[in-house]
Image (cartoon, rainbow, N blue to C red; front, side, top):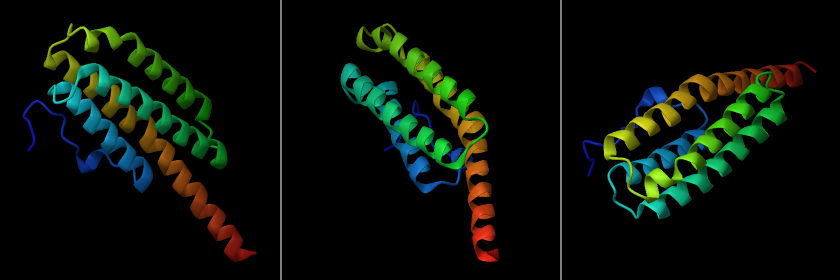
Length: 139
């Protein structure tokens, strides 16, 4: 059952790649477990940290494979987000943040990244893939 404190996944957050969308929903679910304290904070934090790194590695491999022109900027944003997530660890494990602080952090950290970085990257990847398919059919 959805808790009123949770961040709700919306279709507007979907980037159009089934794997990346599933990973984003999973990250949001872990973040929500921290927001509503349904899990031990440090366990949920460690799981989130691990999943974030895995997710970012997947995105970065996709960017390299398709020659995404914004790759370096996107990767630097990934590094910044991992650093930020690392820096707030004590806030979760020590209970320094209330649910509104945790919710606000994830709302801006996760959702803003999806909309500002991931959605444009996936649009490029899909366009590049379509162009490659058309070129192969024409050959």
